Length: 330
Length: 104
Image 1: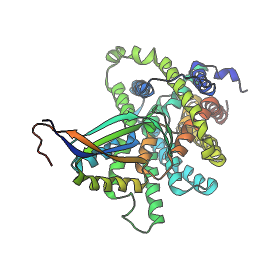
Image 2 (image 1 turned 90 degrees about the vertical axis):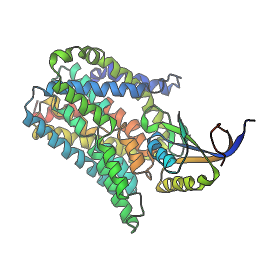
Image 3 (image 1 turned 180 degrees about the vertical axis):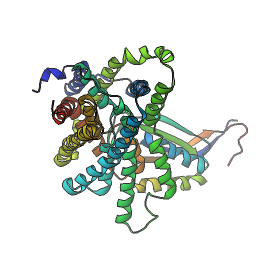
Image 4 (image 1 turned 60 degrees about the vertical axis):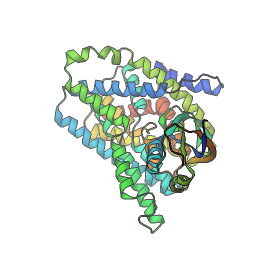
């Protein structure tokens, strides 16, 4: 049932290459900013494709997808927070910051999932792309609020902590206007508004070489994931376990919601599962640096980049796909 | 004769996400300018490889006359007390007088 050769798609293989290159202590290094540049390219690409597909989709289904995305975006970090506080037993501020990561999404994981589905010949709807864009921000807001309440609970001094109203408003503004969100929504809008003939001029740049760019991006991600292994001993076994358990939980919830509430196909439900399972590493970490400075960045970066991302890419994506098939009775 | 006058050089190594906050402090407390360079390194927050925004650092420098130094340090201390990871170090420096600049 589980065929290892399914993983032998270039995207995943390049991830593995990056990982191995660090393990053997190669001096392979990306030039500065290349990963950031590739991120921008990939986000614009997904947004454009998503927008072009959505241009011929019924608006009601799109709105349903947005509603579910908001539910997941606000709900998953709360679930993560609860698990972190009661089962993993870490302090509230670290829990808030980590939970924010797991409620948000990873475009890199999403794109790898698309590559996987394509290699299996599975079709998928375009609604998960809207959900990707919508789910970037709510978790940041939840993390911010959880941290604020935790601080207030710890000290009885309402205004003394890092939660003055001006600062909170500013953090909220930054949460919804962060670069990734603007790129995703903006490109989607462009994909919807611009005419297909005009878009035909730019689609080669965003289609033909897209998967190749993803491979380069994943090469860097593999290297970065391997670097984080050094931090594992600071993170501890329980938290590392959370880094694997939470994506499975989020993935299951995503698949269930995608199939049952949104009535998506197997491919579509699998993608919603991937959204639920993924943890952000681009938009949320800087937001948490500002919003929850007391939290240890080593925890959330190691978990998101060192544990959850590799887990999702190597084991999670096929797992959520099989969950989607199982729930559809296929 | 060209003159140098003595000022303080404030160096801050912080995560790139804090840049806008530091710029505001510089402007608010009257620094005449500031310079930012990208940096990477390691410390209590783990190693910052500079691959993503989240693990990129900046080296933020501003020059301030002695009488403004304390207020700037106070503001930076507030940030550190809130939990932001920053290293702030101050050194004496001598700055070339510009022709039109009135000595302090």
